[in-house]
Image (cartoon, rainbow, N blue to C red; front, side, top):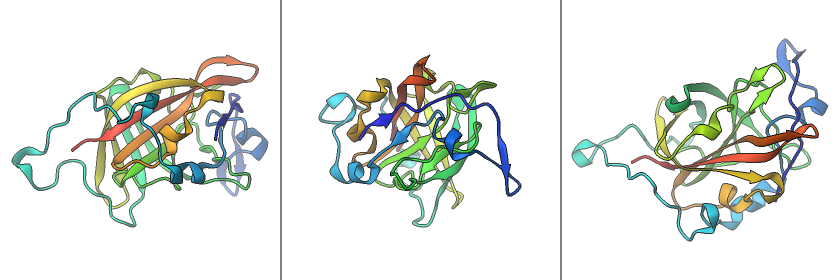
Length: 223
């Protein structure tokens, strides 16, 4: 599976049924690029980022005081859904849309530049496996929700709020940028034994109507 370079900076919104939306032609050209065959990739398992045998834990995370009870990260209820994302290091707070695949097998991008989206085919944050959240990087009118994603560093905290009222905390392990024709499908979507988080946006140079790279943030559950 690869990410197709279809990004073009969106200019303005259209209204449909009283809500802001985008025509499909424009939606196909936004900062979250198309993903093909995601379901198959998730089922196959993955190597860790960069091809290492195990995911490196760059910043050790201490257990909650007292050795028992619930810390800030809690197991999600089976019917819980992620509803918010907070990253203090880049002053980011956003509610979350749910993203699905379209008829062609491509991930539909968020319909709001200031709101990220959780791919509902990935695990609920806090459950085993990589939960995937994507967002736009910018528009012709200015920065979008994930504009500063590339500036995150190892150890930065990420909190995902769930509809159950619980929150799940992650720590950034590493931030990588990839040419879109070298997108690491298995590292991003492949099965993992532990709860992990992936944040995805576009990056690199802007050429011929799209960004040439993708930025991926890899994060591990804080315990």
